[in-house]
Length: 399
Image (cartoon, rainbow, N blue to C red; front, side, top):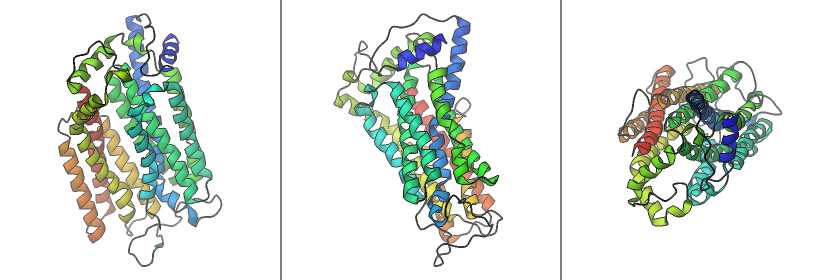
């Protein structure tokens, strides 16, 4: 518990503050701390993205909520649904599932845009608490809502939780060995797979979406436990090395020689230097933005339209299978960094755009004869998306 106590003391301070380093641990304790931190960051990645993924998997059910009464399930009861819009060959909700994507993305985007302006001045612990509370609130609000608007408010809470948690935990990796980035990335991929798979499995087993969402309230509690009880003190398991490594890695970007400046201090970088850093990151950011644009255009814009009548799966079930297969691909590729590294992520962006064009053409012309071909394409889409994510962060760390 000494490591845990040290962890809480260190993370109760803001990123720019400094505490007294603790004594080095024996080699055995050092190895134990390594695995505790590895598992801790994997669980943090899992729990942080879980509510975000579940809301996307439940998007079709959230938007069809207004057609049900009381606490009835949103699940389409029969294998042959009736089109909601008789003037179209597509079986669509009146509101696109892209509305759920917007509610799940925009708050996160705002948090990430504003984070460099001062979020690092806030202590870690309150940020983690707010993230956990918002995640729990999202499940409760969506589960008990009786309107699309209220459900979308719950999705916003999930987005706040995910966005705040991501900028907090990714900044936290600077105080640990670089390997924890791979564990965090694998955990976020696991959130996609387990989140989509659990929602699909529980609804297929007969639970209503409301019951399914309420059964997931243990995930925010696991997030808090992983942070407060599992992570060890960074000084204890990696004394002194990470700050020098971070400083050395940053100097080529800002083109300055100031090794004595503290890497965590907000006063060490002027606005011009921050802009220089940002321009250096564009080579990595732009391909990732293109990959995410293409895959979310597919996931929230086309999944609902890729509907096959010649199958025993209902429309809602097909949508959940699409989400699960996509997340399975993401999980596999985000966990592949140790065996497959891609330096030129522009190639992944190009391939993902080709996926978008192909599936958009199928929505328009309907030339794919079987849903299983779409399953394979969506799995491949997830592989590209996960590879772009993990290799982008890895390349930034190397540069």
